Image (cartoon, rainbow, N blue to C red; front, top):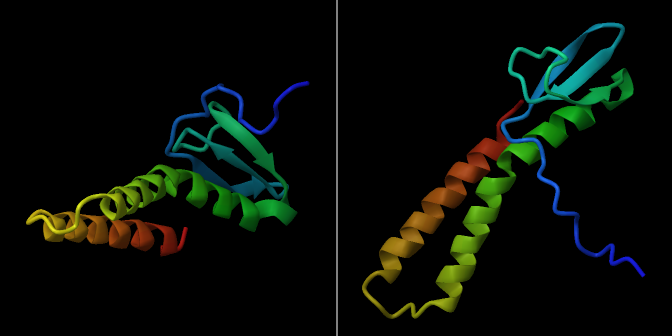
Length: 108
């Protein structure tokens, strides 16, 4: 039986991804080319999925930063917090979290 609980090992298209608003016939594109050309096309999006496409691009582009921030929180929580470095580690984690939140909450 095939184990579908783990994603395949194929690499995803490198970030950042871009969303090109539709110009012809309500078709937009998610791609890896900032110029919005068909080169680097990841997905074609019809007019009823435009808001979802913009949300997908935002989520993909912020994924690595969110994971890094959560790893920092997990590391801090498992570390000895009585050391002198705890305050500086906590400050760094807080700053990372604030930067990620600002990017995630920004309008596309």
